[in-house]
Length: 259
Ligand SMILES: NC(=O)c1ccc[n+]([C@@H]2O[C@H](COP(=O)([O-])OP(=O)(O)OC[C@H]3O[C@@H](n4cnc5c(N)ncnc54)[C@H](OP(=O)(O)O)[C@@H]3O)[C@@H](O)[C@H]2O)c1
Image (cartoon, rainbow, N blue to C red; front, side):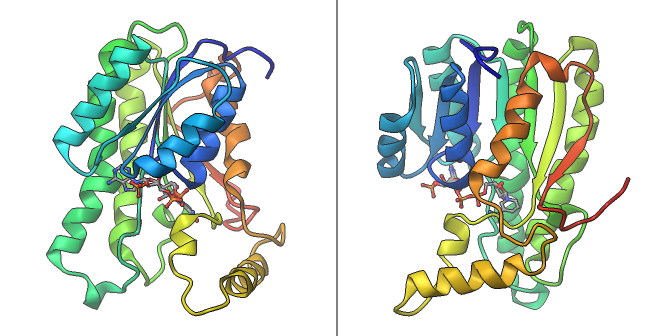
């Protein structure tokens, strides 16, 4: 990829950990200027020390709230001046439960973080994206959007909404040459998995989860956050100029969908 993303202005949500963090590091390595957001300033501070290059900004905001999205957008724009690539990565299961254990509030909370954060931030970024020579929106969805299981139906439904919104928005923005695509990860080891570990021996528990989950995947391992970066860098580059309204699975072959 070389320096093709040099000086591109990239906004990435949910970048304190996991996939968002790996994306921030990868884009900075390619010479882009990154505005990253999460709630915990600790994680952002450590990210800001790891980002290569200059001109990055890491901001604490709660993106489940309309004013949190606006604050992040306004402060990111103050630093970057414009945006070329928006990556709506933030998302969370929030409650690992099945239908009967989910309240109206659980569904509402899932809606706000998994769908509305992307809707709101896209709306705010579009005027600047319209001025960009290489404008991209990349939404991080999930294979659960198309393949829901009985667990966490609220999350799967919101991710289905995000994938659906991607295709709709891509058509709305096609005349502006803003390309909009989604990436659907399969199981990727990250903080959300780490949080599920209980008991004393965390390393052993992690090893067992990774091995067990890996056996369900043709490539025989769980994903790591870095597995998502290659496609995102490509979609952000000039080489993806005829790709929009498309969802890409990055899942080690798990979904095996030929169409
Ligand atoms: N990991 C997987 O197996 C997997 C599979 C399919 C799809 N995905 C999707 O991929 C994306 C990234 O997932 P991940 O597993 O890499 O995430 P993760 O490791 O749990 O990290 C999530 C990031 O988002 C931030 N965040 C969470 N709630 C926030 C809020 N309300 N406002 C602002 N920031 C917030 C977190 O920091 P703070 O807590 O400090 O705010 C953290 O930096 C998500 O959209 C997820 O749904 C993940």
